[in-house]
Length: 351
Picture 1: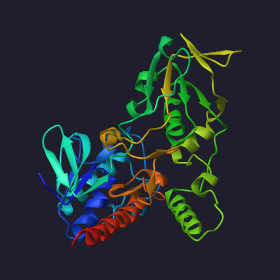
Picture 2 (picture 1 turned 90 degrees about the vertical axis):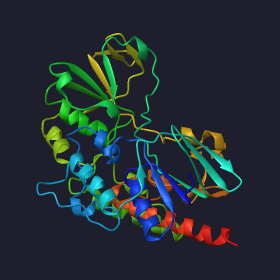
Picture 3 (picture 1 turned 180 degrees about the horizontal axis):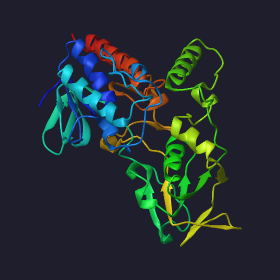
């Protein structure tokens, strides 16, 4: 099958790209490995909520419907993404598992678990959710209790009455700790002291800060640090409640795991379970046949495309691909820039 553009990934980044590709009148297809529309939002734990009101959590073209009581839950986002895809009649094919991408004389061949697709341009928008990161610690496999990654967490029911270690210093760790601590005894382990944002800061402020930083850097000004300069953890209502209950006290990271807990070499903390809230890595295995140029931080990009490969674009991976590009409100701007790049390249390539 042949399309001018193949978008790999049908989550929020892929849909935003699809919106601008449709508006530009380009021939494209979106390949998504999920069974249903909704991106990774349909796999998050049910209690997860956005950091911003619905009106500040929108894809291009169409606002998210309002949510009357605070910040919308993940299920509301799923409903919005499904309606968005249908509204703009985006050509998403699913479930399609992309196995590999290869160069051809005319562009790229995208091989899947079914058909192969040929395209001049590939927009890679696979996100990170399918690649949870597990750090390596001595004794990891000897632990007799249960272990799971935040990607597999759903509810605290399995931890009732247990002693649970939460590992990680970001938003996922704080939110999961807040929920599990209502039914279990918890211990929170971080590599550094957690940095809590002021109570009044939400996703709207974070997006503005990220935008201001990008603008300042583009104009040659000093780096303010952006969102990272403010802190790491947004004080959503469950986290505020956990603070009020006195459970948001982090301990230094352990150095090894024992059969029944963790240790720093001097003392041992007894645990029944460990929840690893240790982040994710970009899902890029299908690009291995391309042998892309890499640096210390991974594949080297020039703006939104791979260095020396202007027809292979990345979208939706956070600051790596544009300020706030991994957020609902931020991905639209970077998607528009990516499609503008596609249009410029199309003019260059045409005789």
